[in-house]
Image 1 (cartoon, rainbow, N blue to C red):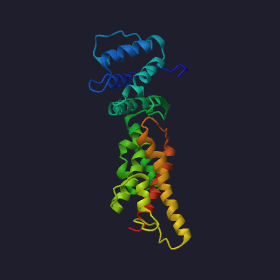
Image 2: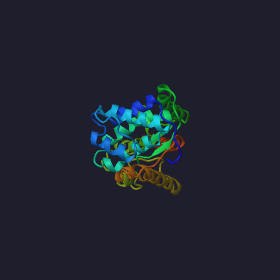
Image 3: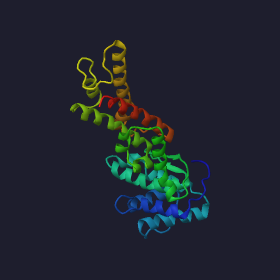
Image 4: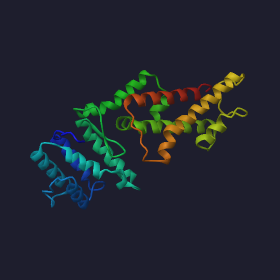
Length: 265
């Protein structure tokens, strides 16, 4: 961020400091000192508790310089994914808590540890309503109920990518429940939608056209798995940035798959 970023409101800054200085999941005292030095923020209160040390350093910097750029650089450095190899739960906890504060200045920290712009919230209610807004739009599209079962309101509110990821996993689980199979991925699809001995049919397979439709549906599921689920499962640091419209379109496709899976029930 090369532009001059205006100062961050004190209440937001306090929330950020408390998150990064969290006793159980936050930065250590040594890490705080290291990153403050790296981003040229004076460590003016090094003997205080961690979050107050951070807060006082951030406020002092903003009061002197009237920008928040270095504070955002601090967050970037301290939340670099490379620092959290083998500690994914800690990373996701901190990122989620930070995003609850950053939304009030129109920013979101992605899984790459980089900032992306988002719609700015002005109240807690407004931030919470994002989940309701997405749910409302999904309801207008009449999406399959399974989507709501696998994607909680909290998940919808905080991360579009993981909403899609969880919804995608619901496809495989539904197929296993319908067939009794235990396989996963392409092997599961090939066995469930075999032309010679199908365990799930979307039509009666009485013509070549219907067989092609059946095969195409199986390939659609494989495509969804390959594009969204397998990418995350096998390469956790490969992240797709989804906006609301992307999530709606993909969830609608997953909804279509669930409707066809249940067509003969």
